Image: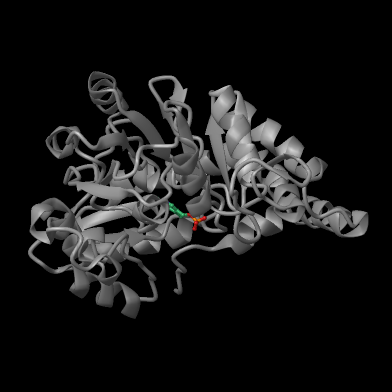
Length: 364
Ligand SMILES: *Cc1c(COP(=O)(O)O)cnc(C)c1O
């Protein structure tokens, strides 16, 4: 049996008519930028997320960038990010001229460790960027308490956790502003690059709205040296269709994850520990005794495709050579050498999942 890591075809065939019709309507309208699909999607996603404002952005990286730039932090400011995340979280900070400061993660949850945040704070720290990695929410009570105590902004990176609820609140609604990505493989994915900012802050929303459109509020009057990082009509039209199914797809992810949790039994493997509700963007195992690569090869041979999120911690990326003391993040290092993400996607068939479970359980 051949099990892809992620299979979008069933998801899209399920909504094919509606999806194609919405996209075709945009093509026929000949209105591609700043139209009604973007406006409506922004309202719908803000409503879904429980925030006042959603601003459509061209991708997740730019969503984080525009938040950081709109906060107008003093030069030399430091922003704390987890040592294990996709590189975009750190890049957004670097691009805007600030310094990403890494905090190690917790081994059991893969998420930023509040104790490490405390230890990373200096007089230049201005913000913390928790990343809700794998679809699981960070320990936000602790993060928000630290932020309040030290008078820091919190900026959530919600690219992997659309629909995740933490103590009654959606991820992406618990901070000054949150950046998210609708890259096709995310829980809510567009048909290309797309993203959004969510915030309850009126002034920040207004500023970001201007910033993403060349720094204008009125055409040809440029009040900021802004960007062009708008969401486009075709992506918004697709996202509007897919948002209506997100809850169902997340429910499927939860069911698949519960089955993995109950049925994968192998002494060499540790299952993820998820402290709060999770929308299972990724299902990540830890492999003991340094045998991760062996397991991957074995699974690949059996036709089961896996990925590593992420194989090289941010501190050891060539792009950041010389910027971090990479020995300070032992947990991120340990994870990079021992984690593996296995297939989990909406409409994954019982038979497919049973094959994955049996193959992993039989591994010695
Ligand atoms: C995908 C992702 C991003 C970046 O999103 P893009 O739309 O690809 O730019 C940022 N942070 C995390 C945690 C991600 O998974």
